[in-house]
Length: 414
Image (cartoon, rainbow, N blue to C red; front, side, top):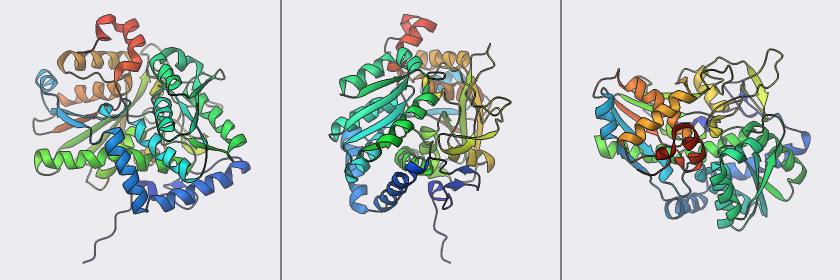
């Protein structure tokens, strides 16, 4: 019997760029239709090109440093009880976060298309930092759009971007966070698309950017699948994969290679930003059953007010402080392949304290959201359950916030 060929989720969208018939799409100005079409043609050609894939893999291995570690958190496991707690330490990657995969691929695409400049958005600063690193590596000029609020709270990454030669452009409109940075970056690209390539920092935006980012970050799950088989002999019968979800790039990359497994065997748990416990604001559209709307060129679940206007969000984590979420995650929610919940700022800080107390690991505030829920739920699981948390970023960028909220001792390395 001939087996049915597996179709990756990023390629399951229709010709108009919709997943499940209603998430995604290309809601863009007329002036961007041709640049997006050109990028789609180039990407669809190169992702099947063996020479291009070898080039990508060369940089992933020799420059980014793949594979990243897969480790058991023995002390945390003993403290929590219940399931075995493991971590995929993606923060080992060059630059300290998963954003480097997407940035590298976008710069390779920019070079192939003959562009000399690349622009991008950033919230936590990791997407910007990685894009500035990759642009420097490949000889491209780089412009990074970043909300003024995020510039203030993520100074280490801002300094790194400037050191790499990038121009950091502050955005003062709206909430002065990621959602506004993406908007300004897209406006810039509309006016300069003949000479400039754009890198969207997550699996958001017009469909081609969702696909490029998902294709790039899936390196995480390709590695994890091999590491699990090496460690256990096969994929565990009770495997639970926890990941923070903002735009959704690290989580999709963490899950992609396991999509075809029954969810009773491999469960996906996405953890959004619940915001401060004393505030009504949050950045958790999937958890809080937000309505479908259009944001940054794509149909998705989005935090909005009663009049349908995009609502401001609030989170201690700049990387998750986003009103929308990837169309891919909307699709996974509707098909019930993934389960979504949220952690508050306070729960996140508590998880960070616990992880750093018991392990030589300093997750940034983004994956600390995932650790919070994983720790809470692991207590209820049997000892043969394997819980894996994607530690997708390091806490260096958060040192100012951590010192203010927890004290200096939580800023120091273990």
